[in-house]
Image 1 (cartoon, one colour):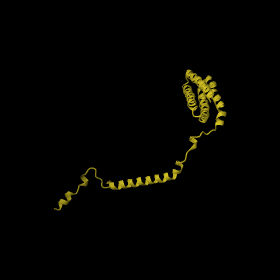
Image 2 (cartoon, one colour):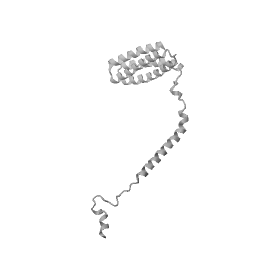
Image 3 (tube, one colour):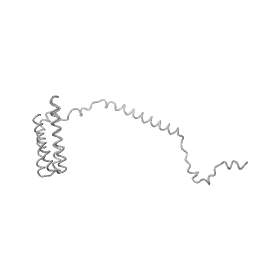
Length: 175
């Protein structure tokens, strides 16, 4: 009878992967879910607290998105200069210095784009669709010229340049 309790106990030295030092005790599953719930509650409450502090700015309107940075007078005085700068890219294209042409094209077209946009926004609503179409045609040609200059495709460069000249003349006559 005394040997019966010894047989019921596992024989550790015969078991292959048993290491009494390396035994790990995992916390009960209930404790993990409780910790997760507590963490979720903490994060949610912090988010709500931080959102209530920023709520005042969320209700404000950012007028920089709706009102252009320049006045109509500034746009009207700058449009001719920026248009001439855009057309002066021709000299660089003749020299086939396409990288410089791209830089000047991007700079002058961005300034011209801002001027034209400001002027179009000041026009009556009935005139805007035609002006927007001309605006789109002009700057799509500018983009095509930029790509043609990047690819150093001479024929496409000159096709795009001539379409820019025509679109610019047409747009400036309507403005």
